[in-house]
Image 1: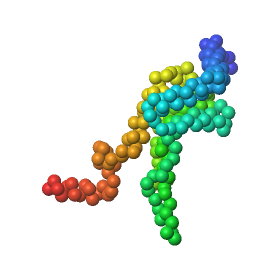
Image 2: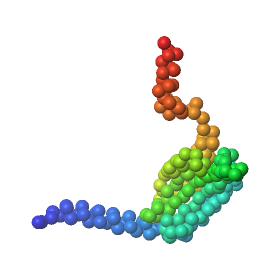
Image 3: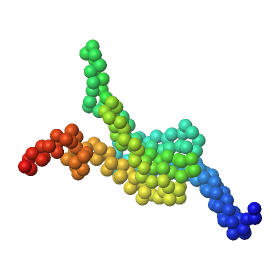
Image 4: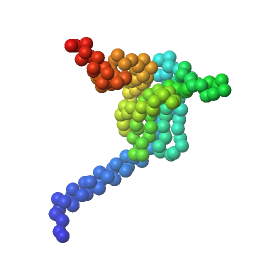
Length: 187
């Protein structure tokens, strides 16, 4: 089967793009090792200190080229507890949330927020993805915006109020009883 010159050129362009992407991955990983990880740690330390945020910075290095830097608020007693018998009481632990800069398989950086959660009190929400960046795209103003978004999101979680839910289907309780009461009140 003969291939046209245009078909071959299209294939060659795609192969060249593929090779470029593979080379970018190697380049991004080198940038992470040489400077980006240190820069992220420094930016997060500075912003936490300047903002008065009590947090720690953790580096996760379990898998080479899938490393992460995390600004974490740690764990604490939630104020909730359960009786476990024989007069014993067990406090439920709260994960206070974290801001994560995770290296992806292709060397790009995933930025996400883990919201707080309390053990045995529902399920943790899935992480909130802020964005995925090429290393050269992560500029100083982004770090401040990420930390501000993180603080805003964890504050909203801590200050949860069902009065703020505008969707009636999100009300706590049995919707059928609420609708019946509203209909009776309107009659």
